[in-house]
Image (cartoon, rainbow over all chains, first blue to last red; front, side, top):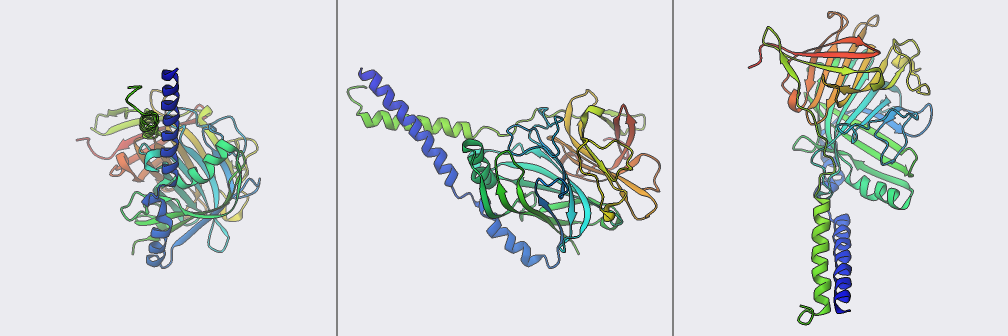
Length: 233
Length: 182
């Protein structure tokens, strides 16, 4: 009887310890999770006239998102349009392939783009990092093609919206602004890796900045996403 | 132990073990792709040559204004109707190595370049655990031949060309380095 009681106490303590650690991790103020407040003002102060490429996230049939393919598991948001041809293989199951239209700062459609992602091997929950290798290719007809690379971190998106959605089917509406870019540059910016036409030979940096307005499990995210690109003088 | 350890001792011990187990679980990689070693051959000129394949079943999406070379896919995909994007075509796909293993994702782009009467072709390949490769074929260049214009990681310093050939409803891509392999 005593053995059973002590075993139950031990197990209860184990569950409590695990829960405390998970809760502590959820609320732990990782420095990189505060980069929107830290790095965005620095970027805005240094970038006098960044080139803006913006698109709206929605499930509208004629919206800015043309195609979105992931592994489909977990089903955080649906494929667009619906398809059974997904990224299921081990080397791409953490990836994403997006085609979208891009608008300038005035809302005019000026380009078409893809975002191709592969899961980042350094992603660890204990470090508060849910990262991807993200390559943006922006095709501006008559101007050229711009190739951009960044390391993206979605830790806050994951813990605040995706996790409650997956665990408790919880939806959210509001306005949450976030700097998605985490690197790879030491200053926290992504980098221009190549270009053609008027972008040929140019070097520079960029950030990906997002405003989320609606997260509902099983539905498309709603909000805006923009790339702010600065070319070296 | 049962007599010498108070009840709180069992709870505390359990708490430490539970926290350690949770920490170990959360320390595991969230992403652990197997990757694939480059299947590179050396040609008679000493250049590295690597071949990638995209089968018809690897095409994820095809969009254009209705006049593109490939059939729109999936059928319900949005067409590109905006005048500013006229003549553009984008295809996203999975990319396989010479052994048929899916090793990454890619995209092929057709768009108006410097010359309004001509079309540029560009490629982006994102190969898992290897990096990104960007290539571009200007209309004035030889048919189906793209110059590598940028990259990351393994491809950050790569100089060479990538040729595309239509193959079984998809593509065969051959990446060839510039100059001899050291």
